[in-house]
Image 1 (cartoon, rainbow, N blue to C red):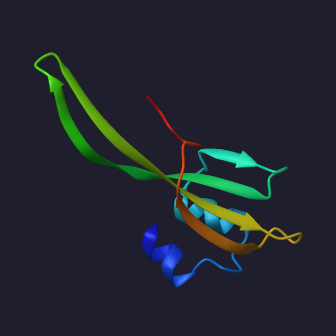
Image 2 (image 1 turned 60 degrees about the vertical axis):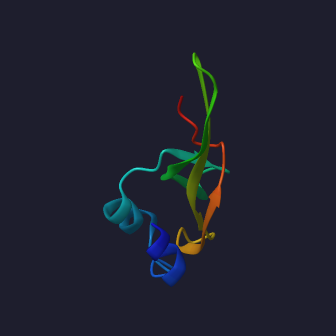
Amino acid sequence: MKGINDSQSIIGLSKKQVEELLGKPAKIRKSGSLYLYNAGNIFKEINWRNRFSLWSKTYYYVFSVKFDEADRVESTLMEESLELYVP
């Protein structure tokens, strides 16, 4: 997904074409004009607090696909987010 975002290769595609390429979105926002995909997570800062407790920090990433009025991809964005956090 990072490669798709960096190259902006899906700009101009229809919703159907995006779903064929990426699958069904994890969430849909703003009356269907914004698709959100889980782009993975990164574990960082794993620390032992004591012998019974492990603390870790996890970063979750979301890939957003924004559609225009004609239901064509207008822009994409990859960012850190808790939007698709799954415990």
